[in-house]
Amino acid sequence: MNITVWNEFRHEKKNETVKEIYPNGIHEVIADFLQEEGRTVKTATLDEAEHGLTDDVLNNTDVLLWWGHVAHEEVDDEIVKKVQQRVLDGMGLIVLHSGHFSKIFKTLMGTSCDLKWREAGEKERLWVIDPAHPIAEGIGEYFELEHEEMYGEHFDIPAPDELVFMSWFEGGEVFRSGVTYKRGNGKIFYFRPGHETHPTYYNENVQKVIQNAVKWAAPVKRERPVYGNAQPIETIKGE
Image (cartoon, rainbow, N blue to C red; front, side, top):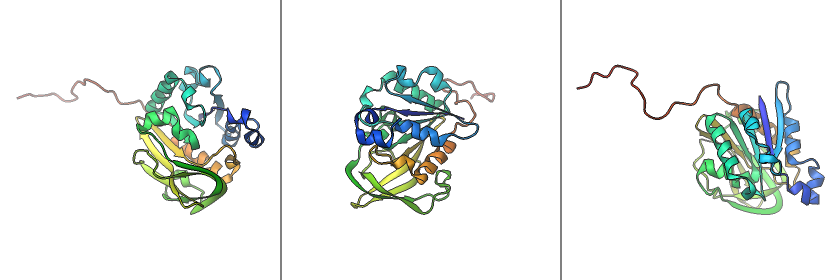
């Protein structure tokens, strides 16, 4: 499996708190725990040529992970179209935390993807809503993050194909924090935790969920359906 971890990589360069937690970037931490035998894990960042997502990289990526926050509008629309097409062709996409506002997620969802938020370093409890789902494998009935940014409903997304996790926050809000979609031949998983000023991606449960999601999102080995005018399979007798 070929995995690409994309990160805009801006906070880590400008914010000392983030730099201390993720000195080499959020993408490097995620790439590190995704390393397994038989996998090739690469990283790509916003300021690289073509945002690191060249045709060669995209065409050889089975699952793409996406983290963005302050620079969504700097992502080139042509790159977004290429990523969208790769998802429709079967590439898996895992959108993390503030990537809910990324161009690619909003394009694939067709909605604003807006929500309520609050930075108060409060407790988040993530409940497993679908215990039979492979993304929840190895996770208990719930797990907790002691300090996280709050995201609250209403989350302006289409009704998910599957709801895997629901979050409760210390301030009282709830949030659909783990949802799946199918678009074309591709599978998409949005996972909420991961605010840059908290060490969320070092948490074993968070890592387990993302590892499971990568396996789940791996492409199905088949061609896309053929669309447009079609010749009959059977003989049409007519009237």
